Length: 333
Image (tube, rainbow, N blue to C red):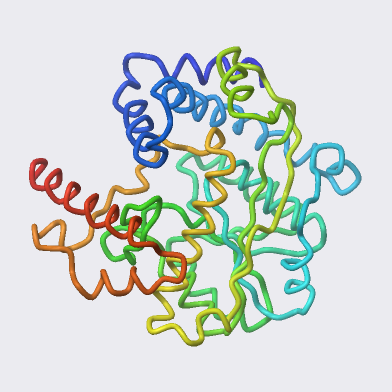
């Protein structure tokens, strides 16, 4: 892990990686405008150290997280509400993001006796893909190919199964555009569609590295300077459960659900931004009005303003950023 952290730091700052590192810095600057540049630069590099360390953790997870050994590496936090719903035998939708170790989250929940069907993208290296399928199935987690896999979802949900999504990825131009760090992002509609169809809760969870954690931002910043290598220890929490009654009276339930689970993911990231993959293109796809150089749609503004957690200040920031993205899209085109 120490070696991989050093490699991650070197890769991040290599000349060939400059565009992706700058993307990470730009994303951080927008999401944390109050941060000084030094902290932005350090956190962008730390995202690469985190990514490279994940490669080791994912490789050793099948051995380290066996039923009789996982407690040495995983601290179980607040799981009560989420596990209560999984124990009912009714269908459930689980949501995580690229924050902490999302692979470990699914592995531990399956090890605890709650089998999951996880939507995943098959790896290009066939031998590695077979290894992933074999090791994940050993804990009770079943991987479902995202390409065509949605056709299997009705049978799984009708049988009272739990389906897990890593749901902060860019969903393309056909996704639903909702706020994510005060910027419109394309999000998966399938999460909300399934929850509405089966009238089932959406359980939002995370697995954050806790070894080497610090009490204050200054301590964390000092650790990033020294590039300390954390040990393999995580804390798993259910951070939020979105219930059917939460969206029952909303004017647009699907928009509310999609914006709500993205807000839950945003809150996870804010608690440990150094464990997020900031180099990803989460905001790659742009809504139609930006691509067409049209004003911000009044109907979309109304939907965003109606979200219970929305403020006037955040709404104006979303609209202003949308105008900026429209100008940048026109320049690229």
